Image (cartoon, rainbow, N blue to C red; front, side, top):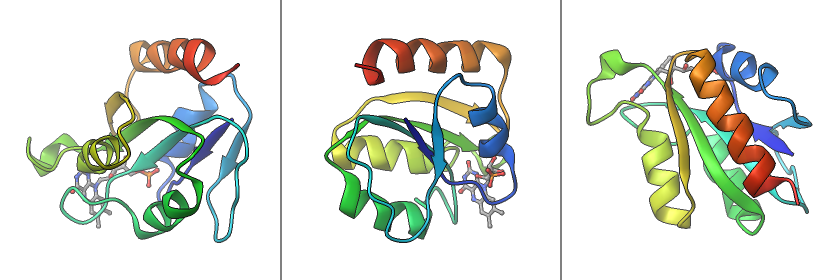
Length: 119
Ligand SMILES: Cc1cc2nc3c(=O)[nH]c(=O)nc-3n(C[C@H](O)[C@H](O)[C@H](O)COP(=O)(O)O)c2cc1C
């Protein structure tokens, strides 16, 4: 399973490139199986509020995080949501993508998904 948050469509596009079941994060979503989190970055390297709230309820089954950001925000803020989530929940930062990323990113995500999320 992939759980994702997308505000302007980039993350939705990334998720569409991965062969996996997916669900968009909304209030009170509960996931009781292993999943990969895919999120955008907000503020100045921040975790989107809805993703923070989701993780408070769904930490247990999160196997890794993929983040999209915009490298124009500079090295200390680029994809910062992924760094923060990985550190806080002690899970791998699978990939950091600039906007929609590239084919090599989708392949790396697919590989992680099949070897570390699907059980
Ligand atoms: C208000 C706002 C703040 C943002 N802040 C950051 C940031 O701090 N770091 C970063 O890497 N990207 C930042 N971004 C860029 C988005 O994370 C990036 O465009 C991402 O691909 C959006 O994904 P989405 O289209 O699925 O919503 C910001 C975008 C917006 C609109």
